[in-house]
Length: 575
Image (cartoon, rainbow, N blue to C red):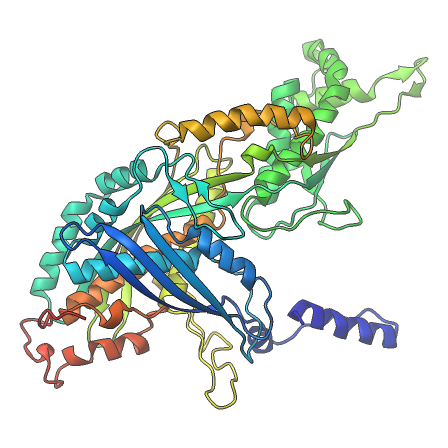
């Protein structure tokens, strides 16, 4: 059973018995114990690589995913992982074998960027391992393995999510721009110099790419109601959960009215009702990061219906003399013109200013790719195993953002959340009873203010002119879209102005950029030990308690290289 179902069953039974409203609020430690979080992953890999160039020829991964007592979304996560694991790398031969493991633990579930985040960490771990073994700078190794040109496939065959093409491929342009902006080569050399002259502090630096495949599902609905006083009420089938969905939908409504009629409602006069089936039935889920844009497009469809009914009033309002105009703006002139029409100068003419819009995605636009890059410099305390992020610079190709303030917040939060998964948010269980030991903030440590990178830069960039498109697929899609729409296959698509399709999703994809933190710490540990890690493996999360065993030989009194206070690098050995 899922946790919400258990709580719903308990409260409904008590309410039925007591004939009273019942509210169940479990203590935070109970709530944390019942929610399993992200699935556990144990993966091993083998790689065939050209030792001179670092070009990967073949890669095989064996992956175990532990999902707790129930499956939840774990079978879907397998396919998401398979669709994302090749990232932006051109690997001629690649296979992944998945196994699902049931546990006598709380159910695991989908967490921000399910499958994709795990896939990114797994792929970048391969590059980090190969880099440390071949002694090729990891950023150079990544560049040598990037997909090039316009025709690149994405994902693996035999997956529920079919193999696709990297449309709008902007990774190369992003990578080049970030290296230039951060003066990356200079930073890399400075880190190497620092490690030579410091015994008990070691630094690592890395730059990593990210690719996240999106799906813009059909079926989101929105209702827009206009009142006589000029206020606008909006209901959507999507949920506002802090991602700025209501803000973006409100902007969409106001902007579209402005574009079509010359005046739109101020944001201060727009309110949202709670999402509920009593408002609009048969809505879809809120998830996958594209719900905001789908809700925007649904609201835009409702606005188009209202625009047709208001054109006559808009023409009348534009003819108002200066003394007739409202001091509050042209939108209120439009409302006056709309509601001042009377039959025989006595009876108000009824107005239908309510409309429900439904977004049905153009089939050829249902799937698209997003790209980002991150550069991170991290420092390791060899004596304590503690790490800190000194520098992080993120860039994401979003196009023209609908709301930069909202999107930057999403990008910052996603990165910090991913960083927490890599650094501090470990889960521990009693080996005998299986009881969760990290069930409160005394024992479970999400990032706090002091964990934010000391230098933290986030950029939303518009790379539409630099994106590489597959000319064959672009041509096929351009031909197929109008034919499918004309035939109503699988539906007649909602008409949305291209001006409103300027931005890509931003909610989940930036989580993947936290792989740069994991990579930077990996290379800091390698610098401390002077050798590649055993099995090229760095734990996730790399908490101090899990890093210290890797650094044991470097600590004073261990008899290792660390007893020489002039250096803690040791000797170079093959793992």
